[in-house]
Image 1 (tube, rainbow, N blue to C red):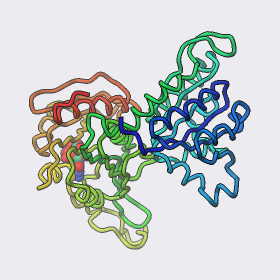
Image 2 (image 1 turned 120 degrees about the vertical axis):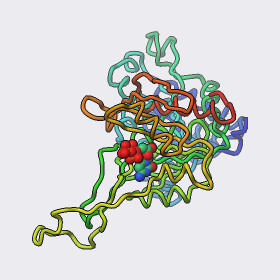
Image 3 (image 1 turned 180 degrees about the vertical axis):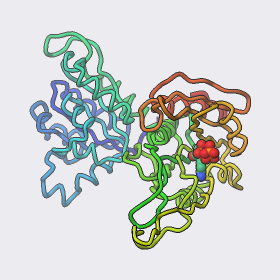
Image 4 (image 1 turned 180 degrees about the horizontal axis):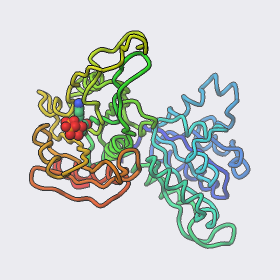
Length: 403
Ligand code: CTP
């Protein structure tokens, strides 16, 4: 497999299985991969920087505040210097920090600052692994598109038996190559454009019209398409979430900016318009704050925004698969079916919104996939799973590549 020439940043946490990480360095190098190592202070209780440095052939990084390191390569640069970050052993502590965004040493800061995929090889006592806190953290990390390999079941150094043993170096190498080989996924060689989030339409310098879109579904789709190997561009309105690893992230505010960014991103093979674009914008955005006196804001004249989905669907460089969303309060299937034709797109992902439905802002979604030939009703699942299933359908459709 062609991972050769790529590089891995290996974070060695504090666990008895850290000795296997030394073997892992050797195996990764055997596959032609460059390896740099961050050794946590707990990790250094189990293996030495000298061993890790000799095997990797590179300086080992240990301290966030090491000024020499900062002048040679700051932790931000270090976090982005590799194609993949592998944490082995990934301790309960490192998982908890990453799941909660805690950054108080070199390893956790690097993990938070990176824009690259992250693969965890957890290793811990079986009770620690099965503890509800670790379960919660693992679920959060999986939803954040963090990859896992292991842990395996087996006898543990602490004398107990069960899940918690770190995956063997060979298994980790396979997982590394699988993640790095995303370029070889079912969507390898294809380019995807995804819109997500709301748009903000300014009324004056401090006020805007917007909606409640969280961007979660669109971000999950961008992540799933990237994981399936597509070169992915995410054009996003203002949201509070970080872009998935490996995705080109373009931030915009207004519908018109979103359209311009999308048109600049064409040609593409796939377009998924998940953004909740404001249908209208104020006719005029005042340059100064509108004041109560004078009744300036007593009524707001609105003008229609461009329809990004319809524009992409009828564009001279139309992607071969154009997918829209329909959030409806009533008559879901008939409204969404009509919307598919009206917008000129191939598929519509339709879901009900309104009282009693959590789709907007929530973590779950229950959708129908509406195609020309019929409708698939999907059960309620997480937005991440909706995204993955959509990526599978896209893979099946384009080039008949089954996922
Ligand atoms: N959409 C878009 N640009 C717009 C409005 C909507 O790209 N200006 C896209 C959305 O990203 C979504 C789809 O169109 O994929 C459907 O959005 P929706 O708001 O439901 O469609 P509307 O045309 O606004 O229909 P309605 O009259 O139901 O509001």
